[in-house]
Picture 1: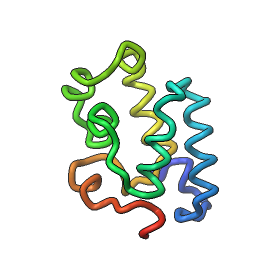
Picture 2: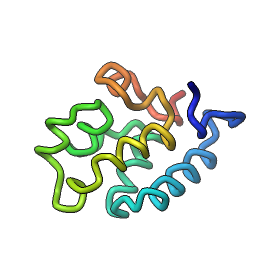
Picture 3: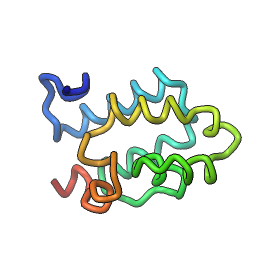
Picture 4: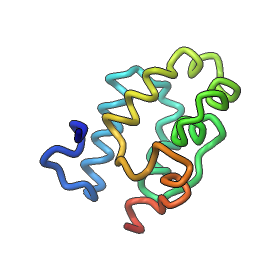
Length: 106
């Protein structure tokens, strides 16, 4: 099943993904201080901090270990955000994360 972000949209359009990330942050009320790391990850493939990396690789145990007081309450929201608002090739497993080079390199 394709998620909403991919239906009828150009997957490589930077503006599309920036808007999608903005929409997701607003929809799930994610902490704004995390947004730059997400942008850099999606666009350039810049490796994020331990918490975001654990979310991207689907490692719940590490996500709980590394979460700050705000993000610990947003774990479900982070998963929904990734599923609905990020390119599917940039998250979901260690292999996908290791292979992601960013939209600028794709």
